[in-house]
Each structure stands twice: as structure tokens, then as C-alpha cells.
Amino acid sequence: MSQVTPMITTDSSTKTLTRPLLGLTQSELTQWVEEQGQPAYRGQQLYQWIYQKGARSLSEITVFSKQWRDQVADFPIGRSTLHYRSVAPDKTVKYLLRLADGQIIETVGIPSEKRFTVCVSSQVGCPMACDFCATGKGGFIRNLAKHEIIDQVLTVQEDFGRRVSHIVFMGMGEPLLNTDNVLGAIESLNKDVGIGQRWMTVSTVGVRDRIHQLAKHQLQVTLAVSLHAPNQALREKLIPTAHRYPLDELLVECREYVEITRRRISFEYILLAGVNDLPEHAEQLGKQLRGFQCHVNLIPYNPIQEADYQRPSSIRIQSFVSALKKQHIAVSIRYSRGLEADAACGQLRASKK
Image (cartoon, rainbow, N blue to C red):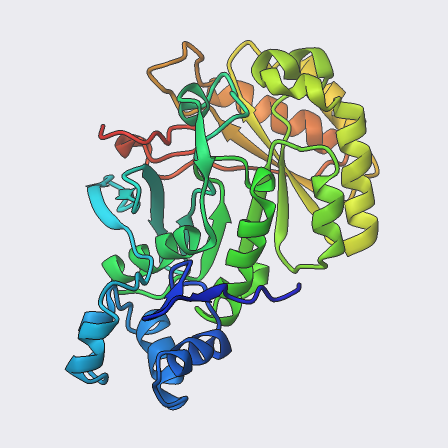
């Protein structure tokens, strides 16, 4: 992936960085401190304070002289402020974070004994308008910048006092409609924060040509494609924007992704009682994915106030699993964490609940 050089402009009195420091590499931070008249080794110190110590402002970096800290006090690192925090009985924590422009996004910390996952947002709102998703009901405002994505991981990591092991781009927004910033965040989270790409998952409803573009980067991340229906007609009812990208064409692009990357795709499928969980739906889904290097993640529906869908019974869920297994489709059930705190899959919304 190509590096992006930070844009620095000069006026008669000072040099001004046109984007926050978070997300810059050590060499880019070194370039910046040198342009401020500081020695190069200050770049390494700044890098450590941003990524390892979680500095939120330059004024708190005590290895710098107070005089210089005062001079650069207005340069933003790019950290958010906590708007709201809630903890579910299973210890999942939902955060509402206020960004520099006042917009609020949601991120979720999901701890377990062996791993610590952060579910990050990639947009403020979402334009995909999935009928069963709280985020989609709220509309779309803007893409998140690279530093706003990285900040979510650092915020959760600092709050828990525990190193993040896994990242899933399954929060608010469609990641492949914000590809440049998502890719930049993945690179920084890998190289600067130290989280392996193999432990990252990028989820998408499917945007024409974007999966193919992602494949060209040869990342080690897992691609999760949200299907939620085994045929185009039903998919358009659940995901109105799906009319722009027919299911058959989406699956062709997914097969090309597997051929290019040699990596298995995960297909997400939210089970909605009486809507997409019938035996014929399992049969159709199996036919669509036959011979595919993939895995199906079944997600029993998580209720939201804005929709009247219901979660299927355990018997219906197990029947769907058995039907896929009979067709030799790898399948598992994912019961979402944080349900009681409205922090589970499909429940994310940018308002205090």
C-alpha cells in the first residue's frame, strides 16, 4: 500500500499541519518535528507518546520542553472525547465518542478470556439502509478520517487497560465506501499499534468493484460479506440499496477475491424469523455457495426499536445449520455480545440509549 505524505503548508509565521498527528508514521512525525525546529529524535518520542502512551494532547508530553509544548499546543493529536459509556452483563462495553466536529460515533469493546476485540465504525451513520439495522435507519452523514478510526481502538484499549488482539470493521457504516481511510487505518493499526492483520475483519454489504480493489492490496485481513438473503428479490427487501449490485454479480466478485488472495471469505447471514430462515432459504443459500471457499456465519437477529423483526427459535436456527451442513457448507452460529447494552450486531446508533 502506498504511503501518504502529510500535507504541510507554510505561512509567514508558522508551519501548519493540515491533519491530526494520529495516523502518521514515525518518519512522518519526525519530518514534522524537524519542521518545527526540533531535533529528529523528538519524532521517535512523539511516536511513542501517541501510540504507546496514548497522549491526547501535545501539552501532556512531558519529555518536551514546556516552551515548545506551549508553542505547538494548538496542533491536534486527533483523539475523541467520551460522550457515553455503558457496560452489558457480559462485560461488553459500548462507547459513544464525540469527534472534533461534534459528530458522535459508536465503538464496542468485547473482552473474553483469550481475546479482546474492538468493533469499530468507519462512517458517521450508514447509507446502505439495511431494514433490520439501527445504524441504517439513522441515515448517513460522512466518512470517518483515518485518525478517527485508529482513535476508537486506542480509546477502548486505554479504558480496559488491556491490549487489543482483534479488530472487526462491523460498527457504523459501510467500510468499502470509505476504502482509503479504512486501508490507511488498517496499515497504522498493524504497524504502529501492533495488531496483526490476520486478526482484523472487514465487513461489507457489497459495493461494486470495491471487493476486487481490496483484493489487489493482498492484505491478510478476513473479508466478511453480509448476504442476509439467498436471492436477489429478498435481499432487496432487506437491503434496499442491493438493487444497485445484483447478488449474482456480487458472488462473482467474491469468487475472484478468493482466487486473487487465496483467502476464505466469511458470509454473514442475520436470521430473521419467518423472513429468511425457512428450509427453502437454506437450500437456496447452499446452492449459491456450493464449491465456494467460504464460511457462513449465522447471526440470530438482535432486536431494535425501529423494526418489528423477531429472532428465530433455537429449533429453527439449528434446522438452518443442519440444512447447510448437508450441502457441505461450513457454518457456525454467532450469538452477538452486548445485547443488553444495545451494543450487539445491528444495534449501533449514535445516540445515548
